[in-house]
Image (cartoon, rainbow, N blue to C red; front, side, top):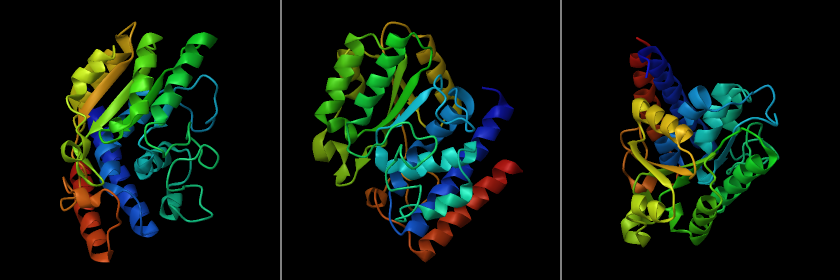
Length: 280
């Protein structure tokens, strides 16, 4: 990947991380850990890969994105704001009763959201339907979805995986945010989904494994998925839960709680320093 583009992406991802911390802190609730782990993928999709138009969010020929792990809405909102779908000032209204930014993505309230999600396992099914619709309608748009590694414990995920392969939905790319943690502990302890790659291969998917925080690897993976024909692709992206905030990294307790004032100040200090270093 071009060094200038990569630097720009790192700056945007760090800015989005600041947006995540701001929104969750002001809401006094939310899911920072899994939002911080998947934001690099989202940044790449919206700024380098997907064909979307913030001025025309319902454009018929746009690429579609479904956040199957809907509790990571703060990450999606932060990236959508950066892309220009709505003002960044709205991020601090997360989870307020009259806000356009609810706790989980809503197609009704939020420009740029292509599917309401939150009940785990359902987003990938919706993505399958969108991809099939493109095939039946002779459209060239592509469909992307991000799932959590804890989420793939849901049986509906595997029904959708089987269907996508059976229908040859090569215009569908799923990403598994593989951070190893879920709300009650490690994925291995709660209900092991491993081996993830072998399961998707058995269901007829093209499997790509990467580091979720390397833009070089992210870029190569999505380019390879775009070129692969005949099967859907899954990118298993090994990530760090809470990435970018030292005390949140790899800590299961930060799956679903907001920082207090002292923790918020530390998170901002760390992220502001990272952003300044990237801009230097």
